[in-house]
Amino acid sequence: MHPSPSLAFILFIGLHILLLIRLAWIDYRLMLLPDRLNYPLLWSGLLFQICFAPEQLSDCVLGAIIGYTSLWLLYWIYYYWRGCEGIGYGDMKLLAALGAWHGWRSLGWITLAAATSGLICALVAKILLKSRLSLTTTPLPFGPNLAIAGGSVGWIYSSFPQLQELNFLL
Image (cartoon, rainbow, N blue to C red):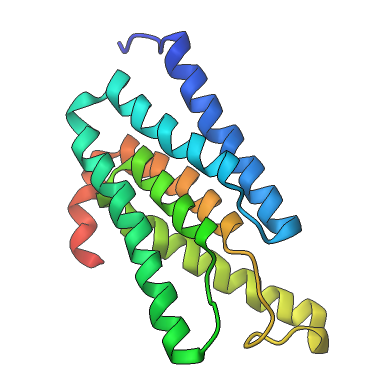
């Protein structure tokens, strides 16, 4: 029998969920992921690790670094290739925050799930909007996909440690 979670644990998880929902909604409506929400998400993830899983803190700090750096590199590769921005700095900070919450090992799955759901959303939007949407020039928000993937994949990944054995697939 597992002990029931403490009030502090529930408050951290509630904050995590509320910040992800708010960030997804703002990015969907305004194509913006504000720092005033991204930073509390990142720091609350690290504080959560300090309070409830200190043995995982180094993995989560590394997750924040790798999360930010991976999208930062993608930004510059795309910028030099196409001559325009392909991803925003808010997306980099959001992936860093998800890395702080779930650790670096979950980032591959989170990114894969976010990219897959983003592609599906873009294709559905193209079908529904027909000629009003160009998939090569119309910017689409990636934050909602990252938030959904981070919340769901991150939770699944941390709840079922045996899935970590499948990391070799990425």
